[in-house]
Image (cartoon, rainbow, N blue to C red; front, side, top):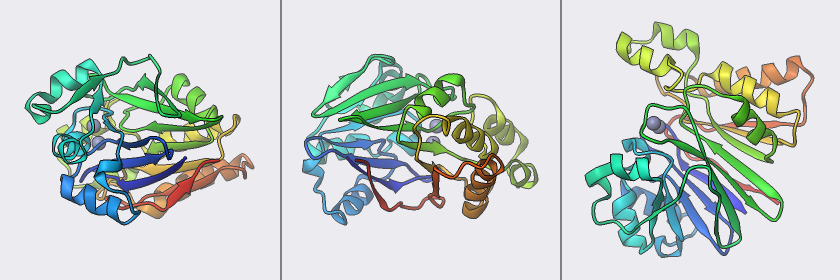
Length: 257
Ligand SMILES: [Zn+2]
Ligand SMILES: [Zn+2]
């Protein structure tokens, strides 16, 4: 399977997972025409998409889902909590439900949606596997957990939120209520927490970590990457490659064998 982060950050999120016989868009938090343009560069037509999967209902993950699913003629897959909370944002969309904790198949892909701590109705991450290779997507989340570490350690590649640097957040112009929301265990994940998760998962089969959903105010791309890199180097861990996607940027295309 190949994978590309079409956009990542508070301005919108969308990740393409292409298995050949199934092409998934994980989140569609951008205007549909922007997603269509990003797909065209690959080149993939919206009609080639099998489904749009939603992690949660926040605008930066869901706002393009309805229009894109209409253009693509494919369903939006989400759990009950996300569908109920999205309300009008998904009105008229072809919707299919999955159940958090219950794996399902799309083409050759097995998809396992698992709960994450975030201030949305029923937020999930996805463990996606094909022929023994496995990818875990964990964004957005306010805190990591043994379950996230275990799943990440069981994956070849981890796409994880690395939202803010604690020092930059503390001196940023954000109002206190917003800082407290970000800092809470159901808010967003710090560079330090992402680093610790990757360090712990490195004891498993993890080989590549991609840092996403970086704040453009409370983070710096090299700082996020270095925070993880230093944490790994301190423990002489050299087998995990670390990449960071700049705020509201696009990644390279990654291949998972
Ligand atoms: Zn969110
Ligand atoms: Zn988000």
